[in-house]
Length: 306
Image (tube, rainbow, N blue to C red; front, side, top):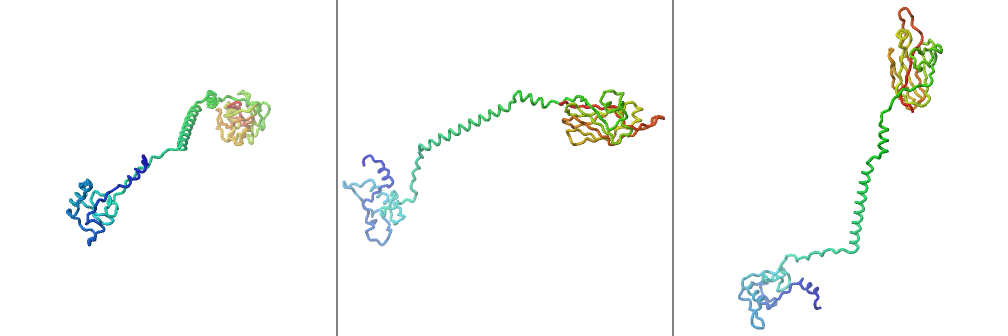
């Protein structure tokens, strides 16, 4: 079909060759005792065309034969000129080199492939946008608002401890009203509490507050007058409890007329109780004998009002 390039491409796969007139010595039909007789240059008959002239290919064949540039066919062993690609006897390929392989055609993208590529690009862009939005949102969330800063400042402020005042005081016993437990919270250093001549054995004191308080410390003051301090029994071992904690606080006081403070771990209490476990003994002063009462001049409370 005119103009059909496919036939031309197919014909190019097979290289044409011309056998021409084979000399008698190379004719497979001629009898020969030697399966592969040597070809002498003088035995190659000159071949001519219709005009009496030899063709250029025949001239090349004759020249190759005359020069002895012949190669043996790997299939039938026939001698062929070195420029031949196929055997003139059996038609087999003379060269054993692999045939050239055409390059693989470039992959052609289809409509579905292009759509998939576009969709993948869109998904990637959306993912990047979402990632950037989360990063910026996280940066904004790290910036504390004024309310947050104010709250943090409030919670980190130190606790302001002030003196707390009990509204009432009671004791396990007392000599009389002049030496009652109320004398411990009246703020008067000239008054004191004395138990009922029991030397402090099993004595206790309770203090109540009008509203819940957080007690951090209490201060106990023995009798400041030196003679009365020595002639009375003093608190030595103690146990303190508050109504918001079930763990008692135990310790010992020194035999001193100086004020002594005790740390308390209360949180929200309205009642504090002191129980006497041991005492410092009373002693005589000059010719005056010791008293048989436990004495305490005052008590103060410190903490935070709720």
